[in-house]
Amino acid sequence: MSQNLNPYSKSISILKEVLGEEKFKAIEQYLHSYDGTQESVRPVAKYITIYWLGRAADRMILRTEGEDDIILSQVGDESVPTIVFRKFKAVYLREYMKLLRVQWFKYGSLIRDEVYKDSKYNFLKDCSISPGIAGEGKGAMHGRCMKCPVDVLMGATRARVTYNLASRFVGDSAYALTASFERRTGNSVDEISYTTIMITGRESEEEKRTGGLFSETLVKPGTLFVGKIVLTMLSPVELLYILWLLHRVTRVGARTSIWGTLEVEPIAMVADVFEVGTSYEAAEEMLRENDIAKAREKLLEYVKSVAFQTSSDIIELTKDTKEHIRSIDILNKELVKELWNNAKNYIKGIEEYLKSK
Ligand SMILES: [Zn+2]
Image (cartoon, rainbow, N blue to C red; front, side, top):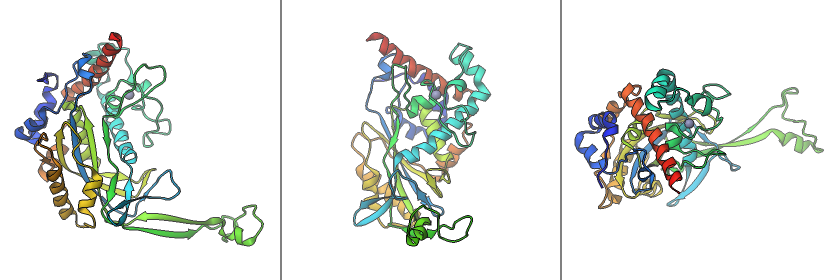
């Protein structure tokens, strides 16, 4: 079924520029148009899969809810450090919020007057895209508006609203290609006595002495990771913003959930009516590789080997593409309007659907 992509003319012209006309044509049928009708929000099979490589730039601790500092997965005969997708996504969610906050500051009245045609609209009051209570840098959450481009793409729920927004930014855990981690043990020193005897209330001296003992597990610098992101029913303008974010946020971590730095590099993109491959399988194929150039080749080979008959051409995100993407003027007025109009129509489609029930 052909669809009208006209509301996305600005983002399409930029996508053609950065990816090349032919490659854009290859994925065009897997992009989606939201026009405010209920038909436009009905699930259809359109998936864009992006594979990325990561490299630990220094020692990393990947915080988990479990008792250890890192999660290990069994890949082949190796136990490798693993980054759960939620931790990875959290970084991009915060960055996307920051970007939209800037857009609202710059174009708030334009978005109100020309997109929503309702000057009372104020996203900043309602949504986490506004600066967090703990300050700009922390990005603390304080509610979701269920309407803005972040909520529409990344998913949100809220009490007393009759719909949920499913995340269309999902993916697999990322797996290290080598079992490179180390465990360190330390002993904390009492602040007053400067001894290792802690006032723990316990009886024996032995217990008091071990009160400050701790150990931590770290991923070694240089460790390579492979990961996968899946984007569903993505509109052209959303694809453009996601590509920009992925190329913009190249260092993940040094924050609360990932301590240390992970350098992230998107490698290949493929569109289909399914997700293409898994990062686990890719890790199996690439196991023990510690050279990033060779890892890149192997990853491209893997993606080619799992592409289906229905798959689009594989779009390699080369150095050239990357530079193009980084140079996009992400605050371009037309682009901003397309992005917010997309979110408005997305929600309108859901409201139309709810009305018809
Ligand atoms: Zn919002």
